[in-house]
Length: 359
Image (cartoon, rainbow, N blue to C red; front, top):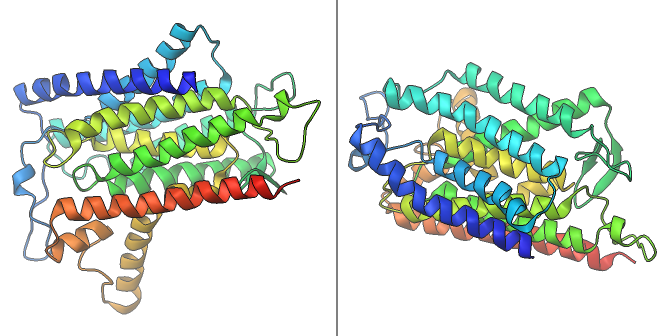
């Protein structure tokens, strides 16, 4: 528990103090993301009040993560692990893709940022390299950071060859990062929902450490978990949860700064890394339930229009549909947070129930 508290505390302090400095610097250089405006052919929610709000706040989240994780190891004098380092690699690598996107949005005033195909290529390079590294570096028990087996609440009997495993990891990473990116459309929405998911993974990893098979060799039961470095994953999850929580202080409505793709891609990468490394890949749709709903709303909107010529919603992603209906922004955000909280509670409940039912 101490490692999680130290990581979360450092991440929060760095983020909550660094974000206002970043806001002042961006404002002094008049660097703000371009705002989409309605046209006769395409209507957007009225966001004129957000014009001039600086973006790229994800830099503060990344700084909080790095200081929280590495600073926590230094303060507690704990060695680094491959699982934690690879989770950092995926998060920072995807954050770098987001930085490139935000650069075009802010410095070039191109509201769409990097071309979709280019962004997908960047995500694929980071995801595939992470996946390849994650099935190497076995510990003394032969465990690698990631497993070849598809996992739900723990590894299943479905084991993938390396090629298919790389595709599976690429899909999980790409789907999660883009889901968080699509959700980041209202003040505090993606940040608050991400804190809940990351907090859940912190608790989950701590539980896996408490019941890790490596420490229960003499009394091992089917309840124990074959997970590599769960305590370090708890520190990683706590550090980025704390950093995101600190950022939320400034990102809540009315937002003084946006996280941009730097933040949303980083958070998506962190959540995907935790799902893969804690062996809970198929539990991800519950712990990230709000993000899944948002993605499905976009898929449904596009599919409905192509098949029938009619749209399911006034606008996708889903939160913009409710904006177009006239709901206040804060009402949408709080209600979506409640939905995410219910998904997280269901996911953690399912995880614990499976442990109880085992002999």
